[in-house]
Image 1 (cartoon, rainbow, N blue to C red):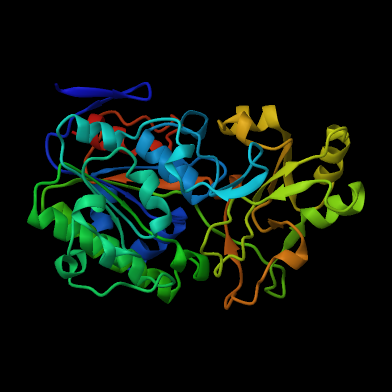
Image 2 (image 1 turned 135 degrees about the vertical axis):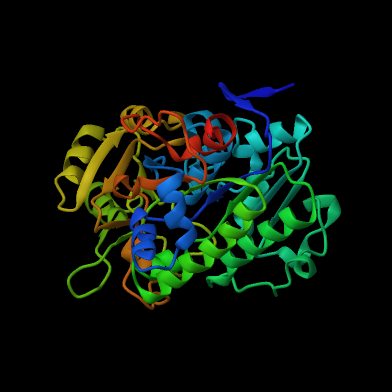
Length: 406
């Protein structure tokens, strides 16, 4: 067997070690600034001698939908993961989309393992581990719970000893550094044919491109990528989403509270606003993002509500279920009656009373909308006749390292 078919796409089996890196929240300007400031010498060489484009992630530009798109090579309409969080009409409850039961398609990682490849996955937060590792016979663990890894569940044990770093705090840049350090140590100590590394956007939520803290993060990343390159890896670097400041002139969060608006128009509690950015780690964004789903009560005038919302300053688009599914390649049955996106500097909330913003110790930076869709797609190998006019996606990353690398 020289290639496999996964979700309608063909992939050649690795001819050498391949690594795909998802840098959480990597607005392209982070790399541009760090390179220009001299903090990413490896990346500077890759941009000159490898392949690079600005690609599009999937909308909603959140962690779970995009990581699953990258490892399935397909949009959410295929794999089913349309947010970090959703309203499950079957159980009349709002739930995290961390359980593999929500997946509707196999991952390329699992299929590569089935074909005999040695596969390893390292993710920063444990919320992603079960989704990324679904059906995978290989190594899959998180930085967050690296001290709990077992051979039976994670395909590896004694991770902390292997990496030589203590378990990092979940709200720290070290959580992502552990991912890179683990990737290098795995590649140094065993046969790995395909590896997926996924970081956290703690730094990107707090620090803009070109700041001292952001440049330090990308300098750290550049060093580890250089080590993987020296080990002979074909490496593709992309992101799950970009990041933008979401503030007023006084640096306070610029929020449109949709639940408060709908309660005023339709009556308290009759509509339901769901914020798919919600996950167990909301300190740095307060569950505020630029994408929201609205479930309306039976008999509501959908067109009227949509028009009222669309008229609000700061709203970019208000789409019906069918239109949102078509435009953003989403599973229609997992959406509400309306999907709302806001402009690049504005976030969407439910009710003001439901958001605890006391944990924000820096001006709000967040994501979720079309304004955070542009992400880097970079490889340390050339591509013959790279089509710069094509709409490349972050979920083309494995296609690049497996099929297109010279």
